[in-house]
Length: 139
Image (cartoon, rainbow, N blue to C red):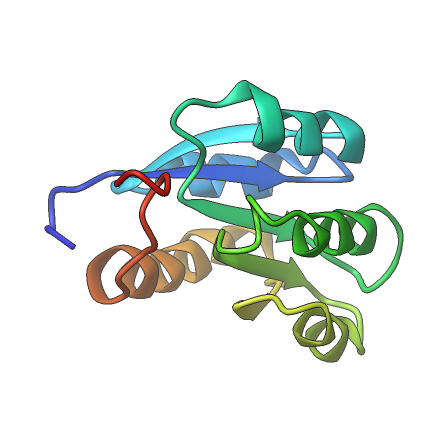
């Protein structure tokens, strides 16, 4: 991926965490949209965005809305290819996110001031190193 390419990202945040959304919004290469609750996020993924986001970031604690969203995305043939990164800090969030076929899990920083560094690491890999799937089957 070119170093000047922006990646369209949809951030699902069940808690509406402004610090997390702000850190992703400050990233140079992410074009961020934020969605909540689960049904609105799924509707946006299935019907609302053309082109769809290239990366889904899910606030994930191993249960509740984040778990439901991952299960729904995995069950949808048109969304199954969408790369998913989960972000959480509960003891079992990492294992549960991989059980639900997330592509990566990032430990949520305990200090909101560390969010920018975590987002920079995500951006470095997913924008500069990884090759994302095409936006549509026609791409």
